[in-house]
Length: 319
Image (tube, rainbow, N blue to C red):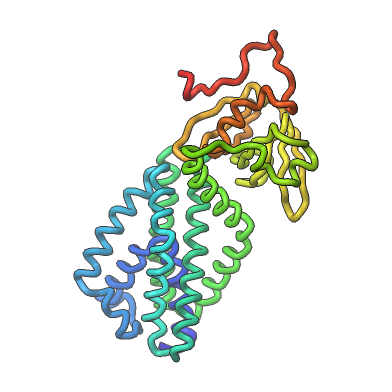
């Protein structure tokens, strides 16, 4: 393969493998087997072996089903956080077989990093899609991903000189989304750790950072992640009384909101969802649940009004 063709192939493999590794292997194997793809180095001919195709097909069917179930998708994607980048690196190593050893190592590292980025982008899109948790939305997204993987990989090998600038544009778009991806990864880690920590201890004043204490005092803070509304998606912050404090571009910001006493809370496997009357919603990780439940008796919460009904109750757990 020529340098431009090899570079286009490596970049294409890295981008699509982070979305669906098994679809990428099937596309390469079947394309090579039926003449839709040409110019592959001998080292990648193994993907057309019947045993490889059968295994890739079985895993693709499993992923096809898992991608259609809203709350199974994050678990499946979390499991593939290491599988997809490693698979992309192995395919890139074969695609760069005619390069020097140093260039091969660079190709492996580059492909693994790009695949991790596209994998994180996919997880982020699916996580944001949970704001509309009906299966139809996730099915359409999953079908679009599968079609995009096949089409982009065939386009990359059939028209490498045209595909290279397109792939570079997709890579730049992914880099532009890095701030959102960072928030998504932070939220995912917080959810998993929160689930584990909730069995051991509850969050408290010691877990509140100094930039919140400087403006709000001690205690009474609850960490939340913005889910839907006027705040940036999945931005992490702290609720103190009716004010939500968060940091963006190295500055502490404050957003005043009303309706916390009328909020409803829905229970989830890794995080709760708090919904305000105006449609704004937040994620609450498990270890902060008791802080949320006790916030009405903290110094920063307004005293309960006896004439305005009962305090907030968890409709999911009280029923």
